[in-house]
Length: 143
Length: 143
DNA sequence: GTGTTTACTTGTGATATGCAAGTGATGAAG
DNA sequence: CTTCATCACTTGCATATCACAAGTAAACAC
Image (cartoon, rainbow over all chains, first blue to last red; front, top):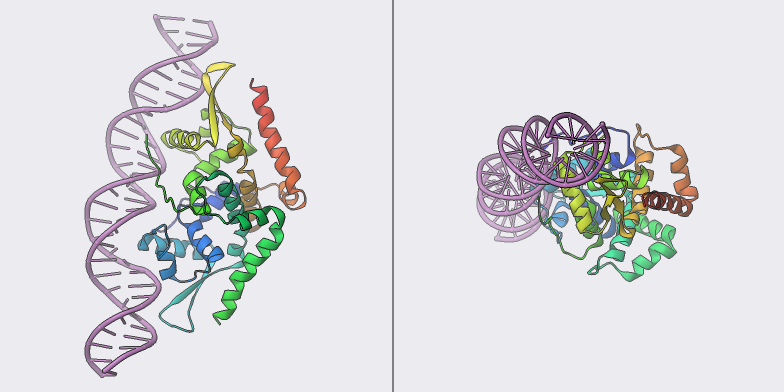
């Protein structure tokens, strides 16, 4: 296990954010949880981007240490764990949405849904509320 | 020079954003340009976060290849180059602001200005306009 | 010319990543 | 209650990336 991430410790909010989730994979995991309803190790592993299993384990641990996600046994299947966003993690949604907007604007091959992109501009608050509620609804089902 | 960054090429907007500026240093450089008026190699090197000179050169080249920044000779001092954000680069401002908001909310040691944080909520559009205008004004002075 | 500033490049050891294979706990089937 | 499959990891190793120190080259100041 790779202990201790590089900490810049400058007090700068951008540096803080990068230390917390600014690596190559954390936001991919967050995206899967926030936008695609994924919540198990196996589901994260199956992502198109092909994250390595040791890296995934390391990132999940780090995100948990930082308080962005929580880990619990699946009551329906006790050999499975459920990973869920905490309120601190859910609050990354605005950042993720702005990244979607930016990429949709500049990537000629984007697969971003035009409906979502339009709604980011026209109904940002409503969209954020929907995404967060949807993410939390799946948590209730798990109980 | 490190050629060819890992390209995930999935069409996912989050993956695209991460491939473009999602490394440990690019957003630090963008922050310096956007929020602190920096525009030369030496100014970036002097940042609190202590970026290594070879990494800085590599990231500036990458950001230029991606069309986020432009490089030009300083007409006032021809041994100096000026790095400036393109419109595509300036359009990262909303993402940067959301990261500031998030970090200010969750970093107990944040040095984020309370005035800015308040304004992110209350006058987001005006703040964005100010940041971009300020960034472009320094470019006019350079001519 | 000589020295200084500015923007890099190069070399080398440390660190992180990616891939393949292995482990241990839970649960399902007979 | 034994065997097999699933799920979430861990371990080992080759490769890639990074950090640090030192060196190079062009512009300018004198």
